[in-house]
Amino acid sequence: DQQVKQNSPSLSVQEGRISILNCDYTNSMFDYFLWYKKYPAEGPTFLISISSIKDKNEDGRFTVFLNKSAKHLSLHIVPSQPGDSAVYFCAAIGASGSRLTFGEGTQLTVNP
Amino acid sequence: DSGVTQTPKHLITATGQRVTLRCSPRSGDLSVYWYQQSLDQGLQFLIQYYNGEERAKGNILERFSAQQFPDLHSELNLSSLELGDSALYFCASSSTTGGGGYTFGSGTRLTVV
Image (tube, rainbow over all chains, first blue to last red):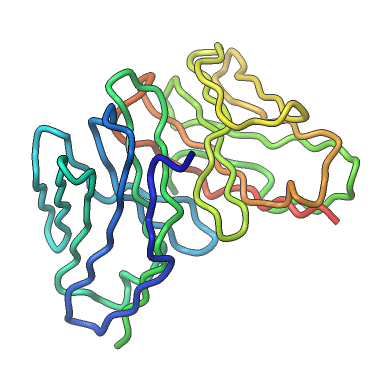
């Protein structure tokens, strides 16, 4: 049972444009959501998070939007840069802890 | 350097063998998590330890086991290895039992031949 799904395995955008990565979840008990970025030969690194009591969180070029009624979140990167090319994982956790549930990841490629 | 150290970085072994993957968490972190990433798959949760005790179990095979030692480092033991066990194995640590973000190590790439 895949409780966190990223339906797009890959996304390609031009430098300077907006990148939008999407994530859907099924477990209504999730109350905290995170995005991780992963470069080849490295472990995932934390990027940005959002609590279920919010619908938006912004950090520089990165903004995460949460639509609880649709059980959907998205990560916007504006403007996109070639260095943003990586695999992006969506993750979620419930109030009881204890571990993150990850999506399958989306490979973002930003073309110069 | 994330502060989470995983050794070895690469491991090639034959089917039927047993291997041990090691993880040293970030200083001060009491929780250790193990995840498996197979080809084209997301990160699958295997097991969590908190301060030496098993806290949660995910899709971990019976051939796999783990432990966390008094110095908080953790080992993941994989036995009777099969070709399908070839994957990246990540360790992560956090300062609490859950919530918030984890800090991941760079992973161990296991290849079973």
